Amino acid sequence: MKAVVTVVGKDKSGIIARVTEYLAKKGANVEDISQTVLQNYFAMIMLVETGSMQIGELRKGAEELGKSIGVDISIQHEDVFSAMHRI
Amino acid sequence: MINFNKNEILETVRMLDNENLDVRTVTMALSLFDCVGRTADETAELAYNKIRSRAGKLVAVGEEIAEQYGVPIVNKRVSVTPVSLLGAKTGGYVKIAEALDKAANEIGIDFIGGYTALVHKGMSPFELEFINSIPEAIAKTQKVCSSVNVGSTRSGINMDAVRLMGEKIKELSALTASADGLGCAKFVVFCNAVEDNPFMAGAFTGVGEGDAIINVGVSGPGAVSCALKKLGKGADLLAVAEEIKRTAFKITRVGQLVAAEAAKRLGATFGIVDLSLAPTPKVGDSVAQILEEMGLESVGAPGTTACLAILNDAVKKGGVMASSSVGGLSGAFIPVSEDEGMIRAVRKGALTIEKLEAMTCVCSVGLDMLAVPGDTSAETISAIIADECAIGMINNKTTAVRIIPAPGKKVGDEVEFGGLLGTAPVMPVNSFSANEFIRRGGRVPAPIHSLKN
Image (cartoon, rainbow over all chains, first blue to last red; front, side, top):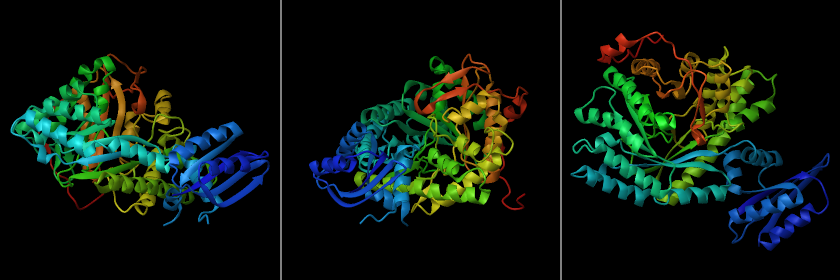
């Protein structure tokens, strides 16, 4: 299934590396990525294919990783965004 | 490629992570007509078996869906055919209530509704027996919720039933006095009750429904008040209504997504999404806060009814397009004890029963979860119910009363129910009597359907 990963927090070096390393380890494939830094505020959005991984498990690990880096990481099923923003 | 722009994505994440957007309840409505046995024991056993087998996976499926979409599902519930009808021949109602409770506890749901009678025009002897069993049935069970429909726009108000309701509420309060009258939080009196309501305490499976239906109640007052905050104080009311519509649309789409998925996984029929904005006692998840965000110093101030009317209408307009089937109560809820902002307003004297009554004219559902002094008479409670029924009957809408005469408590005291039921400051009741009016009994005739003014 496809999921949207968002990473938001104060900018520092190595955020993308740590997040993508985690996703790769879990067998998730990054299909698209966009990232901006505005006034030291980091925001990254990725579309990933989660493969055989359960999204709940992927989310749990990501939240722990977020805590250790000091950013908020959220993983949501693509369907939620389609439901809310597309008619 | 990502099909959404950055703002859309961040808005969704914010609504879920910071603004308490959730699904308040996934409720499975079950018909138990095929469980009527020759004795109450047999009916109880058949009902227990059907709930176990049909709704056994409800909690697990609810949790799976919550995990998959990252959307919390706060409650999982079951509603059943009005129990008064199941025991019409056999009686033994409390046994049936205990079987429902046992099944509810074993499958792990939060509440089971449908300990219900529909007596808006008249009452059969078996219905009288049923109503008399309500206090005992609720006091003896943990999760059973009860409701009685005493009036409708088509048939008027059954004032004999209204009179009984005051007495039963007092009995129920006395039977659950050690828990501050908590039993009364699981009992609601309706005018124009709906048959597909997923919310408690008033959920039951109407006789015109199917066998197993999934009805979902959305929540999300926090998301609406945050949207209004961002809109700013200078925006005019058309802009305010538009913003509420947009937000209600998004909230409802999440409800629709969850409802369709739950129905599919449980092999049930998708019924309705209920568009009600349901608050929780959590800070930031309050309907009162939305009204205050619209420009009131406190909910209860002059202007409250107008703000609530705008909110209620905009929620419906936004929600209707977001779901393939809308039903239930659909409107903003104003339960006092379950809404942090309402509690605050009562504490500082800004919100009274009279103002709440006016508010119920423009929103769903009625005087909900308010505590009154323990010495409030049964007749006065019946008279409060009669007032709410009159509003519902004349205005062709659902109204309800869920009132807790808190044993031994007086104005200024507080009653703590805990969890979603929250905290209720005891509110003053007008002390003049309606005893003679209530004792008349009989029926309020159905209102005229033309010459509306």
